[in-house]
Length: 126
Image (cartoon, rainbow, N blue to C red):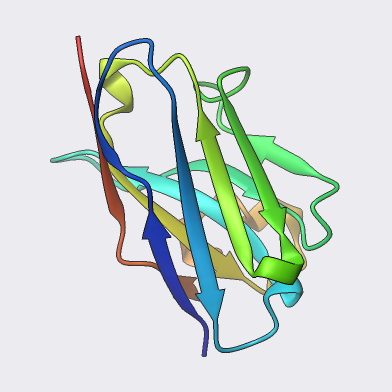
């Protein structure tokens, strides 16, 4: 079992920056591919970014490319999401998740993830 706790959400104006963190405990953090997802009211939870076990490879949804950066610190059992140039449409609950899937094609799907945090709210005003 892996426990995930997100921190760092908040309310800010468009154009601002925010860094989310997700601390893991319970099992070896470096065994898991980590992802960030988000869910806006009335919408499905959607993929934002993923990072491989080593941290050497990352991937992003198109709307996050160039603005968001996912990173991880394995000795600290933590994954981060740096979000810059935030827009009102980025408003959502943000969730970190972990998967032991070895198939990169699955990392975009929430169904691949075994473990989820409780989420942290990000609200961007115009």
